[in-house]
Length: 102
Figure 1 (cartoon, helix red, strand yellow):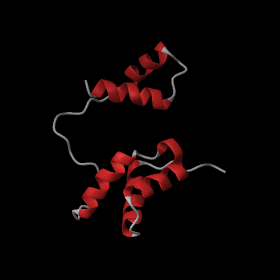
Figure 2 (cartoon, rainbow, N blue to C red):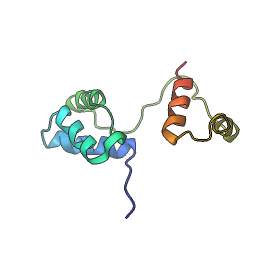
Figure 3 (cartoon, rainbow, N blue to C red):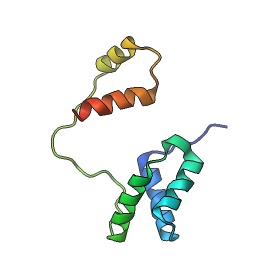
């Protein structure tokens, strides 16, 4: 049976559900980690979403950010894999995330 791996939107929508059930951010985080493991966002992120929900902000879409985001081409990803072909998607995502924030 294939396992479901949630995206950010799914986790945020679940967070609204837990918020409406009057769960704390910590309890919601625990439930998300229990269900999805490492894929779940951090307890700090849960607390940040709870602040938004308490202020009536329930939009789960990412907000536009200033500046143009870096677009990685297939050639750049291939070069990263050529450096170390054993890298996982999470490791590549970390490298790309770190590179974007420098």
